[in-house]
Image (tube, rainbow, N blue to C red):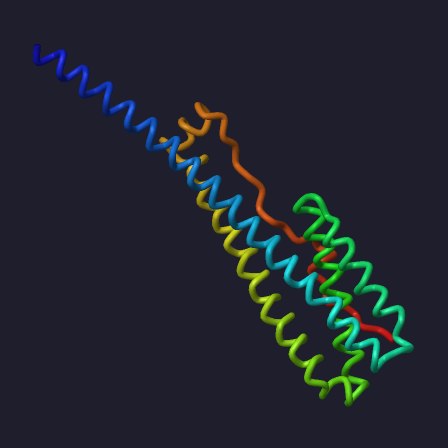
Length: 183
């Protein structure tokens, strides 16, 4: 009778361990999905601020059409991007185009002092910080997930449940270079 209770206890303990590891993979996977959604929210927020910035700049810098078009095109690419790689690429193009717009503002003292422009610039700066934080949180979530997939006994359960390590958000060498602002 005692051996039956020990056997039942062992089966329950083993089943409990299986459930715990399954739930850990689910929780970490959901955290990764959530952090990716947060990146998308911040990128959308930035894309929504861009038209207001463009309209403010247009009023002051009518002959800077190329810079304004670059920002508009980059925003369209970001909004239309379907996967994370395309979003990162479009985001980098948008960031570069925005730097050009802010450099243009240096040449227009009235624009530089315009309350709307300053507020939009502050909002974009705050959004940039949020995008950077969301990217960091995403990569931290990937790290936790990948650690679980690579360490024992998590590696055993990862293989059992068909879980594989996930990719970090990466920046290409070309994207790491300083942006040149030319007129």
